[in-house]
Image 1 (cartoon, helix red, strand yellow):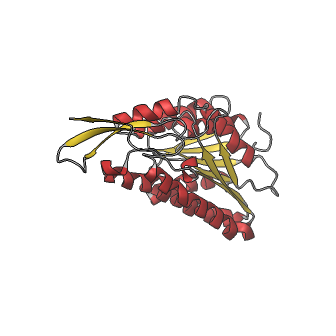
Image 2 (cartoon, helix red, strand yellow):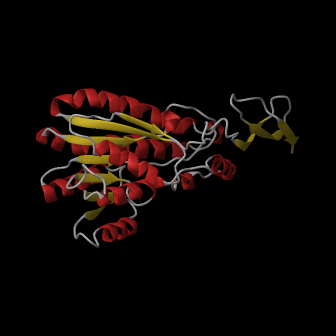
Image 3 (cartoon, one colour):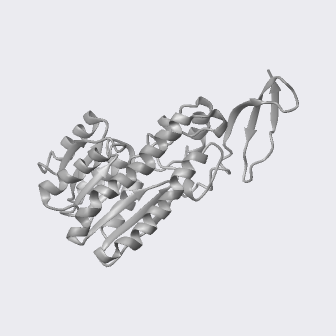
Length: 288
């Protein structure tokens, strides 16, 4: 049982699996009232039924695509319609399609921006008017520690995480007159389905190896519960956490295959690029 959460009305965007589902289960144990949003309707319906077995109505599933501002607003409005308020929103929906820039995954870049940045802004836009009116609330944005540490294949992921600091800290200063709290979470290697959004086979294999020490999704859930459960006069603004054993992406020696034009010849060559603590030069080359 988590103290300080019972009766809180919490909206979770991106609740169907991974850290979002883990947060829902953990908050439900503390007695929170949950509104679960995600595109995978069957998944969130199943989760809502699971959480409502002992307490009917504890969790409500609302099919939601966070790239659609109207749907996100509907998710939050459902909570307000049922309970007259929204105490917190967890903007958790995200994708992580890692790849080197010269794979030119432009559609994946667009999707990352639509889900990971605009989706968060839509969540804030949906919840903020209600929180201003009630003069209370908690906005929790989920980023990635890639916003602090850059690594090969993670350029776009880092670019989408960087703005979270501005959104969360700028927003924190703006909402102070309304006693609204804000938190940004920077997880490192946590066991989720995010790796499944990586379409490049070599990058996926390397990332799986680099994140083999990932900690359970429940670790994220405990961080969220910690921030929410604090007294009203305590505002936990940032939480950065990682596996105890993890040093960094570079030290995990991420290795992947890169196809590119050989500057010294007209033929294409296969380069195996290995990065240590500081990115180093190509360590092996095999012509086609």
